[in-house]
Length: 231
Image (cartoon, rainbow, N blue to C red; front, side):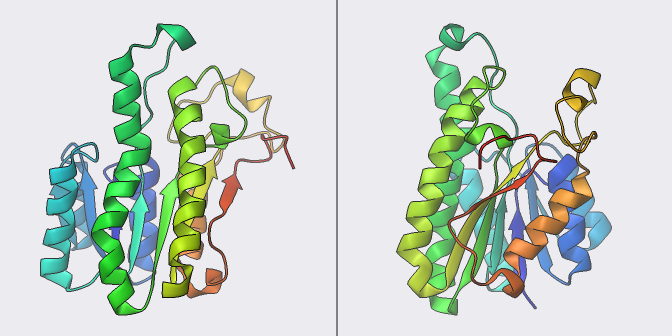
């Protein structure tokens, strides 16, 4: 049975992804900064961990506990919260550094922890939950837009480097999703005329982790109702 790790799994998209993977038969280890991941893990009969994705020691402990219990890691979903918003040049350095930990370094640190194991197992799959604004930057999300664009570059570099080992990495780019309050002016911008559902993000994540997506790597998959305009 395959084992998947999911971060920021206590609510919203992370919790929906955990439920979808549970239904698909994965053994799960769930992490969140609050107690939500442990509560969901108790409900699903899997492993929960409380810690921060911005702390290298917490990530290391999370992976170690999962490996101690399950003996392997086949899939990882790097889900995060949203970095600081604000006036572009008014955002303090500390918030940019925090965003780096939250959006990019968490993925790099996790990759360092699981890649040797996946190489030994003959493969694995990683999905990073990003944002539609990664490649159409928005002043509403300055830190996220900037650093998730960097995440796109890292995912491509990683996927090229480890494709020979059967390890895939893709980014999933959600638009406005129903885990956040709906605003009419935002709905008006979406060609499909509605927010996405967390379940839709979860099902796409499951697909990208599956063998059905075995020839997809280094990609940025938009799940945004058509809100991005670039082709």
